[in-house]
Structures are given as structure tokens and as C-alpha cells.
Length: 279
Image 1 (spheres, rainbow, N blue to C red):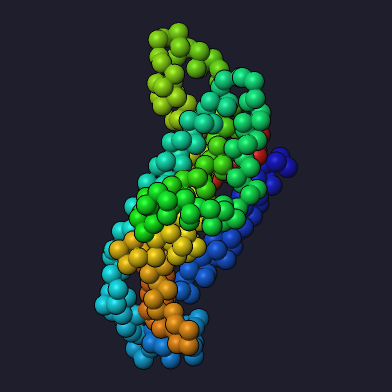
Image 2 (tube, rainbow, N blue to C red):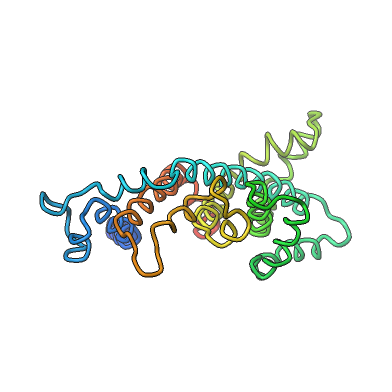
């Protein structure tokens, strides 16, 4: 009886916490989007109010579309992010499957070596990376960014996916081997569908740093034809004057892919984060 009485209360409390967390997380995003439709005076006089007939303006979006090639920047960011995510998930899942499935001498050391990238920031090797890209002729190319972001995301992907792949039933994999499936088919047909929540978790946590990064695009690909959307938005930020209308409009447009990805993978993301937390 007591369990039946407390269950609705716990459900209501969980929903209240979820609503509060969502409101806190989305509040800065909403402020940016709201102010992107205001005049400069409206932004500074009442940043938290909705635009009205006096403060409403599309000057920020008009400036973004008129100055620079925003659609090219957006396309470059999409190419770099999508290709990097594909490489991180594919190679990370393969490495995690090998570490989780096959026992060999040095297995633990290999796992520790791959996980070191989580503790050692890749930006510490910026000078060496730049020298390597110059020697390879990859400066001012999207390939340089893809290679760097793939190397940046692999340690976390291997660390997370290997733990999930160890939980996949050995009986299921052995049954596949008895049926004549190759190791590649076991990996793609049996294992990957079962670790889909973990894949979504890795995808979300990998995409956001790539999409928002300014450091490596500025160092490795600052040319006009290879600028990403984050680097392209810096055009409106000057040393003495900042065009806040254009900056907020560019940020609002840049937020859309992240929100779309979250809406697509939100259920899988929550399952991946909370897997094993509740028995």
C-alpha cells in the first residue's frame, strides 16, 4: 500500500526535476534566439523580454546572409562533423569490440593506452599537429580537421563502447558463430544494434565539441573556403566594435543542428547514460 501511495509522488517529483532541468538548460538558448530578432537597443535595454513592434528586427540575419558565405561555413561544419562522427563511431566501435571480445597479452595496457587521450588534451600537441599537417600538405583543408577530430573523439568512444560491449551476451555471439556468421557480421548485425544507446551517447558528446570548436579551425583551416560556422561567426566580432545582432543570429542558426541531433537521439542518449544505474 505504501509503495502504491508513494509511486505517484515519485513520478511527479521526477517530472518536476526533469522540467526544471530542461528549463535551466534551454534558458540560455532561448535568450540567444529571442535577442537575435531584436534591434541593438532592444538587446541591451531588455534582453529577457520578447521582441515587440518597437524592438523586432531581422537586421542580424540580413547581415549574416549578406556578409561572408554563411552557407559555405555551415556546409563545411556539417561535412567535418558528420564525417568525423562516422569515423569515430566506426573505428571506436571496432576497437572496443576487439578489446571486449578477444583476450590477448597486453589487452589491459592497450585499453589504458587508448584511454589516455581522455586525460591528455589533444590541444597540447597543437604545434606538432600543425607541423605534421604542413608537411603533409593538408593545411587549409577539411581533411586536416576530420583527422584531428577523429583522433580527439576515439579515446572516449573506445572507453564507453568497450564497457557496453562486455555486457553483450556471449551466448548470442557464439550462436552466430555456430550459424556460420563471420566476425564482421557478428559485429555489425548482432553487437552494434544492442549498443545503440551507447553509440547515441558517444555521438552527442562527440558532436558538440566538434561543432563548437574554434581552436583547430583557426589554426589548421583559417582560409575563407574552409572556415567552419564557429570561425565564420568571428567575422562580426571586432577588436573595438561587435555586431551583436549578427553574432546572435549566427549563433541561433548554429544551434539548430545540435538541437535536432538531441531531439533525434534524446531517448537513446538517456538510455545510454542511465544504463545500469537502476536495477
